[in-house]
Image 1: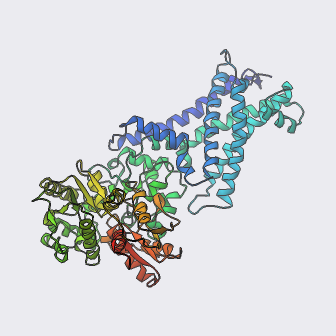
Image 2 (image 1 turned 120 degrees about the vertical axis):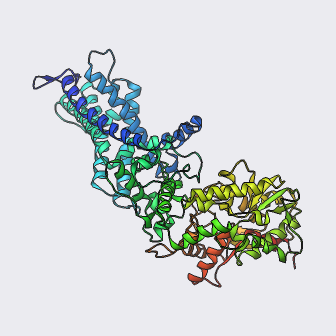
Length: 631
């Protein structure tokens, strides 16, 4: 076989042609990539070099193993094959380029090394088949919000061309040499042409030109994510449910952190975030995918920015981040933008009123802190004041469970069950304030810090071993955003009590029901099994909704949305969509483990005309029923 690099073409040696092409194409790639790096360096700093071991583990699982895509089922297999073909073909390309530019090097071309050639040929065939599957999915069975742009078509075509040109070249080489590896032999028999040596040279150059063009074009294309996304995973958030460190907020490039801007460059525009987003699916202006697009255009020098109505539509449920295969952090960007809007006073009137109430009274209801424990007055026993006498469990009740008359009966039920189970518990009475989860996520960092300080002062006066709360929003903030608190959700405590026999149901309920995973209990804190074990112990047969566990839908109350007017353009509230999903299962009961879920779904049942068809019950209500002696 003639060496493509030492063969002359119109009197010019191949190695000289390679030098010119490499300098031009690699130069364009480096120049554009350097522009992006310089732009990111203009942004605020952010430490993403902590816990390197954990980051490497995430990289291995979600980049090398394409873990997020396998969560969707079989579609992960084609993605994995294309990815690893990309890795090996990139290695083979640089190897061939180096050998071609410096033909005197005493090393063979990659396809002259049997092991490398075998891997390239097998992966090439598998990747071509996978590209066919990807093309059918994209153009014939297009998932909602997946782009069908000319740029995507060009990228797919280039990948197919570089694979097919290499495989064809191997077939022509096998014909010239009279032997080859199995794949090359089969292809060679299919390619029965005159002058196979010349065809081999043609395919070698077509492959190299395709890869060089691909390299030069990629940083300018919408598929920049092929380069940036591995860094997105490596420098991704290590904890779910987080928010950015305290800042004045951001509305222009220099005010974001470099990691927040990187989101735009890593975005694959696959639409998975939009398909999962309750705000988008309800018809609000927010599109998580377009939010990332705004960032990308900002990094590229544009002034495109998200509109306030988009930013305020978010429920901060983290569904977008849970589904994103490249670990983009949509919620962090939204909170950063909300902080800027709060600083400008660009806030919904109802939200403004709620924030004023929280500042003055420590709760969003605008009621006296002395009325916080009024719900205890109808109990047959006195609830301990944990600030005055030691308790095993300090119950952080939360605003809604304390003040909302629709929830107070469930709050009293919780106290009664705790009492029956022999739980030594107390509360902070008027010392408790809103935990600040939603306050922080609407962008009022200063108010959050004030609430946290007041709560920590009250908690510091109490003597207890563990904190327990019925509110997943409070759970998340107390556990992850306060200082070293041992916090459990009440379903976790119930699970412990049932397993140890301290809580003994008197009868099996014989109920068939479905269960809603709260966003801040599930996605943000990974608590899925405890509520289900409790329900099983009560004799509840669980029928799972299509969207459950980490894929659970949102009730629409989070991120301060419970304090705001409906976003413009709403077709159907998330809570209404959710109760319809539950009712479609044919069950009569939707079980919840969050105070906000209870009120949101009860309201939704009325507006969705499901009264008498579906009932919403808190886990604790079912526990109370199971504690009653059988009739």
